[in-house]
Amino acid sequence: MLIMNQLSLKKNPIQLLGLLGLFGLLGLVTGNTGFYGFFGFFAFFAAIGRSDEMLRQNLARAGFNAFVVSMIGVSTAIAVLTILRTLEVAALFFAGIFIAQILTFVISFNIYEIRGAPV
Image 1 (cartoon, rainbow, N blue to C red):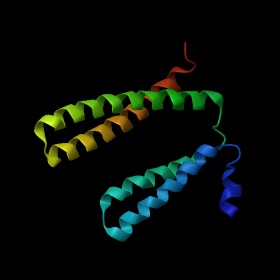
Image 2 (cartoon, one colour):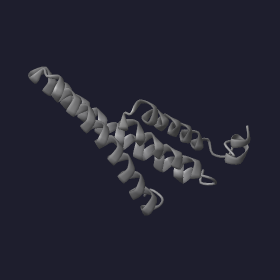
Image 3 (cartoon, one colour):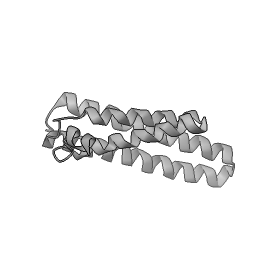
């Protein structure tokens, strides 16, 4: 309860994404270093007071860009995997699509934040 009061979640519910950072602890328990990436979600706890309409609009626009990239990537992956039929290629496509989504979201969001209001 103390954490909830300090974070002022009523003003900015985006801070709840910071709780996903707890999944990073699974990396310490299981030894799987892939879980360490979840520690990055703790940065959402620092999003105090930044809950304006422009931020939400930029998040939505960047999320849409990442969605479009994922649809193109998944469609391409399905087409290629029907021909090749190997699990190694499927794993590479899965990782590549995930990386492309994250990069598209982050780069788009930064561009929208620098550019300011949409034209």
